Image (cartoon, rainbow, N blue to C red; front, side, top):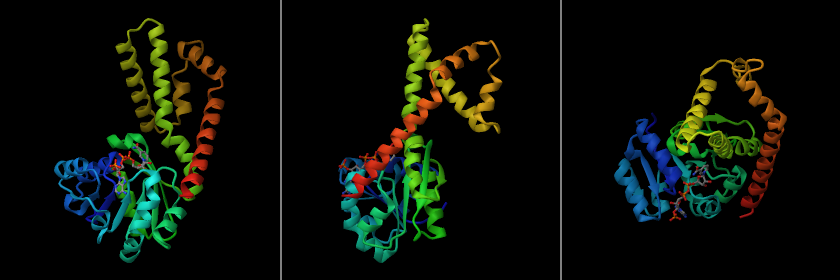
Length: 275
Ligand SMILES: NC(=O)c1ccc[n+]([C@@H]2O[C@H](COP(=O)([O-])OP(=O)(O)OC[C@H]3O[C@@H](n4cnc5c(N)ncnc54)[C@H](OP(=O)(O)O)[C@@H]3O)[C@@H](O)[C@H]2O)c1
C-alpha cells in the first residue's frame, strides 16, 4: 500500500467509506487527511480512523499527493476554484467522485492544466462493495493513475474508461443500477407474498437468491446467458417464468431504462458544467 498523502475535501458518507477502506487496506492513517466543516463528522473521522482532520480545506491540501473532491456536485466548482492555485503549485493529482461533473470542467475551475481523474462510484461503495469507473485526463501520469486506482479500490472494484463520454453509460448501468436490482427485489418479494409466503420468508429468500445468483455469475467462467439456459429445463418451472418475463420484453425495457438514465446523465453534466 502506498504511503502517499491523500487529502479528502468533504468528509461525508463517501469519504468516510474510502477512508475506512484505505485504513483497512493498511494505508497509514497519518497520511490521510479530511477537511470537513461539520465538527461532529470531522471528530468522528479522527477518532474512528486516526486520520488528520481539518476545518480548513487549504490546510488539508498542503503538500498532499492526491486531493479527493468528495463534496456534492453542486459544491464542486466553488471548492475547485478555491483550491486551484495551491493544487497547481503543488502538482497534486485531483480525483473527483462527484456524480456527473466532467473532467474538462473540473480542470477549468482549477485554473488549467491539472491532472484530474474522474471517478463514478456507486452506493455499495459505502460497504466496500462498489463498482467504480475511472477516467484520467491526459495530464495524469502512470504513478498518479496507480494512486487513483488504489484509492478507489478501497471501496470495491474499479475499471478504467478510455473515453469520458462513456461515463454517461456507466452512470446508467452501475451508478443507477443498484436501484434497478432493489426494484426487482421488491417486485419478487411482493409476488412471493401474494403466492402465500410471509413477508420475512419472502424477503430473505429474495435477497439470498439475488446474492447467490450474483456470486455464481461472478465466479463462473460462463456468460450469465449460459448459466440461465442451464437452469431452464424445457417445460419446467423456470421456463414458465422466463416466458412471462420475455413476453413482457424485459430486454427492451432495460434498454429504454438505460437510455433514459444515460440521457439524463448527459443533461446533468451540461447543467453542472455551467456552474
Ligand atoms: N453516496 C453515494 O453512494 C455516491 C455514489 C456516487 C457518487 N457520489 C458522489 O460523492 C460525493 C459525496 O457524496 P456523499 O454521499 O459522501 O455526500 P455527503 O455525505 O453530503 O458528503 C459531502 C460532505 O462535504 C461537506 N462539504 C460541503 N461543502 C464543503 C466545502 N466547501 N468544503 C469541504 N467540505 C464541504 C459536507 O458538509 P455539510 O453537510 O456540512 O455541508 C459533507 O459532509 C458527491 O459528489 C456524490 O455525487 C456519492
